[in-house]
Length: 148
Image (tube, rainbow, N blue to C red; front, side):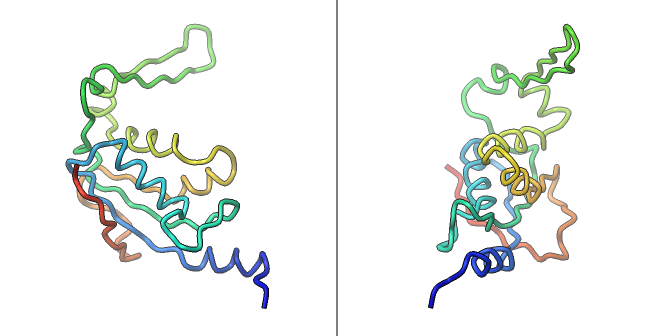
């Protein structure tokens, strides 16, 4: 018996799980790779590149993520207002003080596919400052990540 395309899509979408990751003392890049892998669905044996079969990820304690080396002062985040002279540059240190969840969001977003499929994956990411989150009703499981 052959598996049809629609059966594959339905199976991929109905098996979505919720995972929670505690960012305390985790290196930003290594954690972002793991989060992007879960959002894409590459951790599942049923992974198919053209089907969005990833899971939901909740990241807590975003302010406690670690950047190695001198990245805290040297790494820069750019945004432009589309007006002349509208380039805004912020260091990782400034962003960590004001909006620590944005650092994780930028890192994970850069590792997801570009286009509509990547947009849908990114919508399943929830990042929170502090240990509390709003997705307790979904009963997220702890995703195993080790500190290196």
